[in-house]
Image (tube, rainbow, N blue to C red; front, side):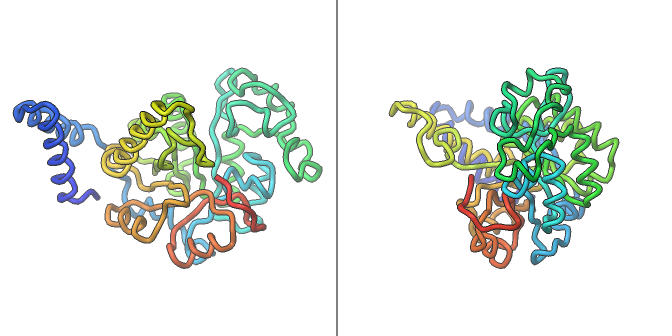
Length: 331
């Protein structure tokens, strides 16, 4: 829970900033009061701690931390496929992360990218392809183990959920957009498979997705995904904008977004976890969120040294592309 001292500090700071900007104590008081009432009225309480614990601390083999196969374990098998889910289970994962997308007719399927080009032998946006067209593609065509997994199909969301449940894996649903459609589809999935309330979590970079999910079904465990400087820089650190003014503006937006994630958005959405890019996690960072009743999960952890650090020092869950090999870290 957010400490009462936190709220006093945050709203006092807001009041002072507005006073300095407007030179009106009355206006600053009204705006601060409005925002406080808004937060109280429209924020969602987190799900019960014991429910969140069953999802995020399921008593996993690796020192009790959750080990999640990123995209099903994209290094060990073709990503976001049933073969990847089975392979992750065989290799000792306690969970799988699955990326939600939609076909032209609105069928929920697994696909990370907006197009099928990178992972299949097809081409074009997922949203422009019918399910029948997707099912004709080879989801292993671009994978390093394409010969072993030749002919693997793009699964529907329901097929992936059913397989994950059979394998007794915790599911991390990764939703990139379309909050209304995603929340509706996932709500139906939770109603069809009630076990998901204690064995899955809905996560997104977009706060509006998580807010809509909590609004649709407040009993679902949720998480915000975050990477500082995401708006201004690519994952390799290169600036997104070539102009100085563009870099400055997006940098300012990044600072505001980072502050909002750590002080406002998590509280408004009532999340149970923060999925943070691995390079920004420390013992102090884990403690900061623990004091607020929020778990930290790192991504994407791909070396033996990093995994040992997460399991034995940080003692928190993490996402990984491989449960078998030690290779260069990926973002």
